[in-house]
Image (cartoon, rainbow, N blue to C red; front, top):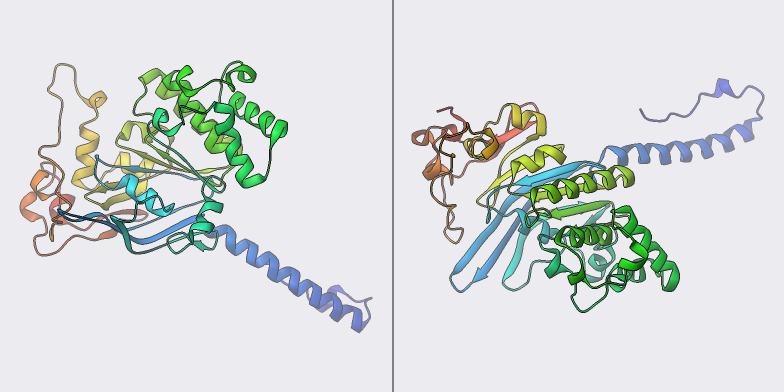
Length: 367
């Protein structure tokens, strides 16, 4: 509710001049409070019509086409899809990590704290990456420098973004390792990455990503290379640190079982586009698009013992030749492929309140 200026009858003992001086101060205060209240309802990140393509010798790869989504403060957004669906490129585009050339952002807007990330200069992005937005990559062994001790890699963001050096930075790094469950952090901080196990290296990456207390954390399949037990520990750790710091999270994965554990809202991507977007409870209770239903059906834990595991037939389309019709039509077994759009690409529409899906009759149909 907006803050209003109290009426004059609340000030019967004030002189006229004092009242008007107070009114001017109150009006400025109310305007400030109202602006703050308005900012609270705006998302932390608002992406609109993001389109990223790669210009190669073999043609133009339409990696991300017309993708729109938002992330609220403290929310966990899951982006799910097969390899090559555009999940990682979407987030790399936001942080200016797409190599140019061959990559090129053709259009779109990504507002983060009043800054359009897609139009920001390299200097602006350097001030945001690692400070306000951090990222955890899929393979920590290729993300950590094997020639540098963990202490140097953990304290580097502190030196760059907070001008913190020496023992103060080292103590902060030790605390960060302790917070992610690294045993004996005072000694282990002086180790090299190869002296840690895979799960421990991923914990180091989480500590490095969160050491500057970012507002947004992007996790690019952080559990893919880990066994099931360590995977659960890493997921719990990310969730606990998010709760403690109030950080928003974008979680990229191909595994719907993983996002069911950690996410509030889920975007399902296929062939560079979002085909379905809904709250986690709505998407798992009533998936609308045939591709989402296919992903859910292909989870091994949902299969009966002794039955043949369900797989989605065929392969994702070649994005150098994007389809002008429904991209999922050749693989659609859980809908009605004869009803799929053939004259145009389907668009994302609100099918149910808060539940969006591509408006392709064949993919929305139930087999």
